[in-house]
Image (tube, rainbow, N blue to C red; front, side, top):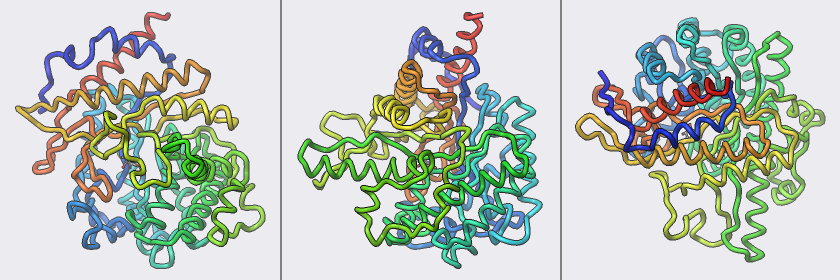
Length: 462
Ligand code: FCB
């Protein structure tokens, strides 16, 4: 079914791959990641309810290519083959999310047995293949019924989410290797509710900040509830984080970078780890700052068993117009994101210096490139360079004492890239959407060899 290049020598010399692998300790977790709405498809199958992304995709102009996750990778019907594919690659950890409206169509009330059956079969099959399931409870697909009551701007949604978390914990908590409450609350708040470029497409800073608080509160309450109900698997949250660099050393750009650092990093890290919101951001927000009832911040600050970090690029902040435009000669991915591996080391060292961090999982890292399937093969050397240079940057952080324990490539498969639809390919496995065929890209072969080398390197040490 898949054609494999006979050799990987052209991609990266084997001794270099082995040296990189040798920089990681035994027991380091290597995986691949996806999320429910981006891969599952089967949007109207077996009782799944609508999510805010189903509705958002129906809005003219919302998605670059006018597409939706209706079919996506049809993973709902192809999960067995996709797990076999992971097993072929000898991947031993898989990060995926649960679609809330698949297991509770209206976001409150009745549970959908068929929805849970799918995830229970998925988890059991992963375990049979020796692949550790790492679950994310919320990767952006809120049941639409809750959005019609105000969604994450409503405190009631927090309680509906906690009920959902408890039910997932009850059904799957004893079989999964970790549970993350939320994926990237900054994106949900700011792109979903301030910029409006992601579902639910709201444009209000005040709404966005209230949403961020409710997401954090729901995280804290869910952790308390999961622990109280006896779930023993590591619990945490996933944040998108980048070092924020000023566009120049002008006073204005430095101030903007400091503010963005507050809005992107400290607005989430401070409440989670220190139990407070940063003062400079609060005063910038003024009347747009959320009203925080007494006790909320203590609830947000729960002990974390791990912190997930999604890293793609650095952020360049300033007051000029060419914001985030990488300088001349800088390499960018198909997203227009600068390739900046040193930023991962810098970010991890900075977080480690500023906070008492729990173990870190790099829950996403990867790149979109305009991959082409030619004669059955995708030669994505640029992605191999991207992945290997970021893995090396992570090794640098590890060598400097940061407790990094896991790394997940985004993504196993090309998939529905939100507002970019299918126009951006992040997979190490190519998906031919015309027939849903999966074809290993060169980067998948490289990752398989790299994983083999991590095991080989370990054997030498004993
Ligand atoms: C992250 C998302 C993930 C994927 C990557 C490219 O922000 O968590 O779903 O879209 O970006």
